Length: 145
Image 1 (cartoon, rainbow, N blue to C red):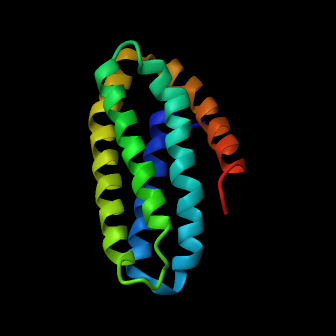
Image 2 (image 1 turned 30 degrees about the vertical axis):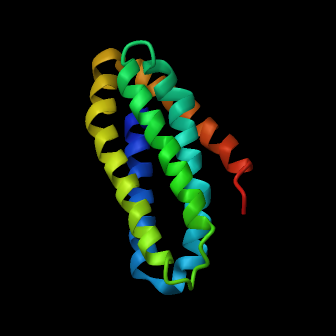
């Protein structure tokens, strides 16, 4: 099994590709919106329940900042989902959501990953990967379709 940072990076890559496909491929937007609605909140929930929970005491400011960014992403995703697909405001809303998500992922991969590699052992990173997967599955059960 991969360690948690590898799983998170793979999720980031997948979500980035979803956002890019939403922008570039109108034919698949309906399905990709459903996938984004399930994957993005589930990913953030699983991060907070596993990696962030483990790092909260050793990197409180960084974790507080990332959780704040998650809240902003949740708010922006909710506003985005309220816009009809054919509305002229949809593409600008997607661009705003994409910008905030990609900026968060980049900061997380630089700052949070660095803290995790510094403060957590290799075995802890592997241990967290199992919990990350379970938390994502739990969150997916509650995703609104």
